[in-house]
Image (cartoon, one colour):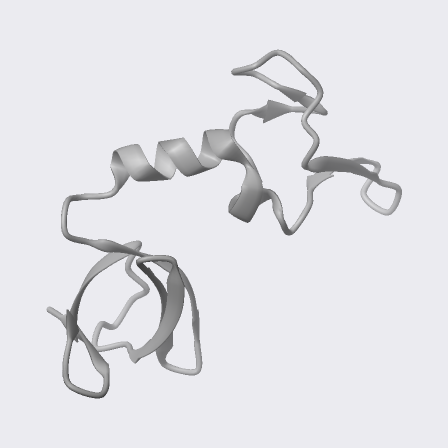
Length: 100
């Protein structure tokens, strides 16, 4: 859920959020799946919080991390016990590796 949205209004721009929709099942507004990808405000906030030299982890599935690596989403083995928000990636000859 977007932390900047109050009901259907963005608290930063004070306009109706185009990435929110009314869900009758929960009787409240919800974020669209494309919100994390296309919302410029969320994208700017993620860039501010990302440490230099690190790449953002999109999600984890079956022991693999899916990492945004220069505009490409790559799949790498997760060497950590938890799911980190950002990781350092090392490019090898034919694959990628997470640096601990």
